[in-house]
Image 1 (tube, rainbow, N blue to C red):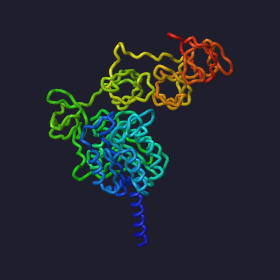
Image 2: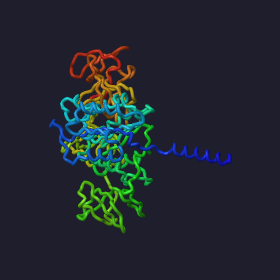
Image 3: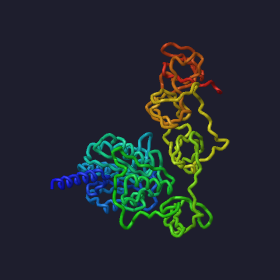
Image 4: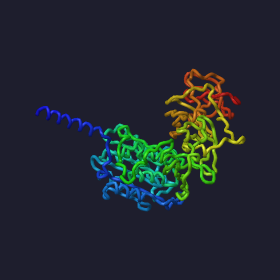
Amino acid sequence: MRHSLAAFALLLVVLGVARAEDPPSWNPAKTYVLVASVIEWPDKALAAFKDARRDEALVEQFKADGVPAANVVFLKDKDATLAALRRELHALAGRAGEGSTFIFYFQGHGLTRKEKTFLACYDVNTKDLATAFDVDELFPILDKEWKGDRLLLLGDCCHAGALGTVVQRFEGKTAVRAACLTSSTASNRSTEHWTFTEALITALAGDGAVDRDRDGKITFGEVDLFAHDEMKFREDQLTRGKRTKNFEEAFAFRAVAADRPAPAKVQGERQVGEFLEACDRDGKWYVAQILAIKDDQFRVHYSGWDSKWDEWVGAAKLRPIARPKLKVGERYEVEWQKDQWFLATVTKAEEDWFYFVHYEGEEGDDDEWVTASKTRTPAAGTKPKPPEFAALAPRALVKGDAVAARWKRAWFLAEVTSIDGEMHAVRYADGENGSLTAADLVPVAKASEVEVGDRVLACWNGKPQMYPGVVASKTEKDFSVKWEDGSKATSVPIGQVARIKAAGK
């Protein structure tokens, strides 16, 4: 009898451990949702959205999943003012108690200025972004007033990826698991369609198409991947989720709905749900998705086209998606907006599909991810010219280095604050920030490196802008610089001089 009891107790322990190791799942009953959505504004500088809105369907899906109606706040169009958004965010965060999940969703226009990202409330004045909701406001409000443990930020707007900065600020706060899913990166404008929101609705409805491993559960990682693919293949737009280390990729939103099972695997190379290129009845190739497979025939939907054009095709009319590949470090003309082309350098690439570009002579505010379709080889008359000044002794820069940094046609004293691939983030001496390639930077020289006769960029009269000149003499504390514009020679302190190549070299 004692042995039986011991075995039973051991079984309970084993089952308890198994349950403890099961991936966590969403509890809609303890979830609080704030949805703010604006598709038209009194400020005519903001274009109204023309596609049928999907915010209402998202709100209804939250409720259908079990979020109590009393826990859902929906601010729509004229109700989504700056004051209302702040008021309801404070109120709902305060109501959501311990153990709660808090979901914030914004749909509309996102705006940027320098390193700041703003959400365009209904009453925004684009000439005064103090009238918009600063994304940076989210963290202090939630950190102070919300007592829950799981946070999910959702954004379907330009620059929505800036919500990831809020997630990062929760990193290390072990009591909170935070994550975001967005339609675009922080640096990019977003599509004019609600493809991302539609992907969220599809996932929350339990559609088996989201269940990539076919285990019957829809996880955060699978929703992230599903949204990524929907935006990539339907909108040519990069998006990726972000999460704190303690927010589990296997966190389960729900089980797959019984009436919407994952498509069964079939024999052969192609699978239902796959994106590829298909040749239509006119012999033209388009990005398409396989909807069904039967008897070696494939029913496809052409991305961006009405479903009335869906058709059955044979395997010979399918092929992998092929895109031109750009080279990191190469310069191209990039279409920044319709019919507006600017010179830019590719600084990094992802998936041989997306390319991050730095616009020539700019401080980095408009740098963005583009696809090859937005680029072209510079024409002979528009080939980029190298910067006016180049380092006499180039070297790899590191964080903390003082540099002469270009801003348009001028040069300023700055400090390297971080390096990401080809890009160097800098803080100019006047407090502004920029992001530049190495070609737009010249390291500030040590006193021992500077010789009389050296051509330099140097600060004039202690101001941050740097001008070209020649070192006429040097002491232990400073240099006498004869300016190339003919101005009288003046002294420049050590630490404000960068050596550059002689003119014409």
